[in-house]
Amino acid sequence: MFKVAFHSIFAHPLPENHRFPMLKYELLPAQLLHEGTVQETQLFSPEEVDEKHLLLVHQRAYWKKLKQLSLSPLEQRRIGFPLSKLLVERERRIVQGTIDGALHALEDGVAFNIAGGTHHAGSDWGEGFCLLNDQAIAAAYLVNSKKLARILIVDLDVHQGNGTAEIFMNHSQVFTFSMHGEKNFPFRKEKSDLDISLADSTEDATFLTLLQEALEKIFQQFSPEFVFYQAGVDVLASDQLGRLSLSKEACRKRDEMVLRWCREHHLPVQVSMGGGYSEDIKIIVDAHCNTFRVARDLYI
Image 1 (cartoon, helix red, strand yellow):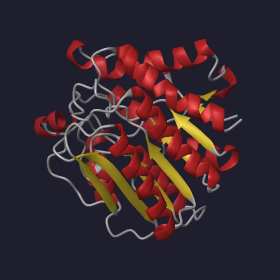
Image 2: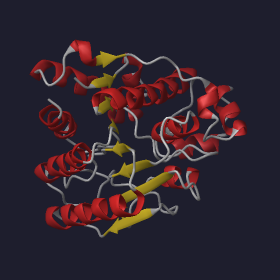
Image 3: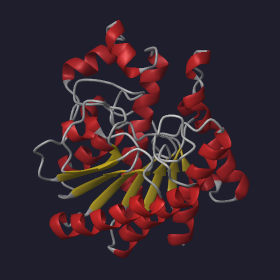
């Protein structure tokens, strides 16, 4: 039975003009429990991550500014949230949830973080609602503790995982794969080990074909031992920021393709939920729930 990291602080209140991106973190666990996709016993509440783990990927000077709430107004605007002690605590708990999830995945095959996927945070910057890069930190933790030697990060959010790419540039033990909108944020891209840039209005068949080919290519070239999956649902045609044209069913098939590929190759996988900005919150929540439903059906 897979484990799911969840803490009430994941949905902590923000000023009114910032609240919508957080709303799904309240609704998603409630829906999963209501429909029986997960049970209370599968939820775990992470502590705040030890800063020694953060410093595996983030520069000490950047972490010091976060901890002391001393980011400049420009740096805060780049993040998109007003900096606060509660926000930093939230990020630290998200990171620990992903580390704990990775350890659970080693036992159970798959584990989830209700939040996370903070892939725009680089070694010395925060950006795009991301302060600390949860999957990058967890990947570095696994490598540094010598639990695993070859980690794959599969990032299928509509925005490139630029922070993840920068952190692991020239890092032979972590392979970064990002499939994202070519003309979408961030407008200055970093170089992943494999980038697939998608044209505006890319549809279901093209997306799924490219993904299948990429997974086969990566396994032949890199032969990973563990996978982190960033499962953003901002690839949907309904997304206000996405610029792609995927149906909800194609998004579900995307998740099934990745998780089935991991299961068939005996690769433990930790899943963080990433972005989703459709105008109708029900679409966002249902698309995220599909990722959990797929795992429930595959890992029984």
